Length: 114
Image (cartoon, rainbow, N blue to C red; front, side, top):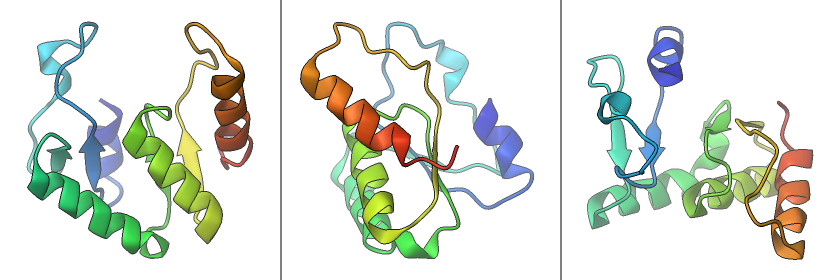
């Protein structure tokens, strides 16, 4: 998992939108002392995420692994406004493309540093 590897080199805060996905293996959420994460399915985690968004300028980088989920879009747009570098992990496609999805993709992806 990419987050486990990154945690060897830097301090991470990882938020997942949910813990369920039809295509996700049960091993997706790997437990490790080096990696802590929260799932945005409860008020405590949501409040922690909101607090981190408020202090986003304190982060060196932000990585949006699923850049079109609600939480990732919030972080990416805030990074854009505050000048915080962010990376996105994408395959470049949307299922059922639309004007709105294409607009969001161009806005968010164009401003990513990687």
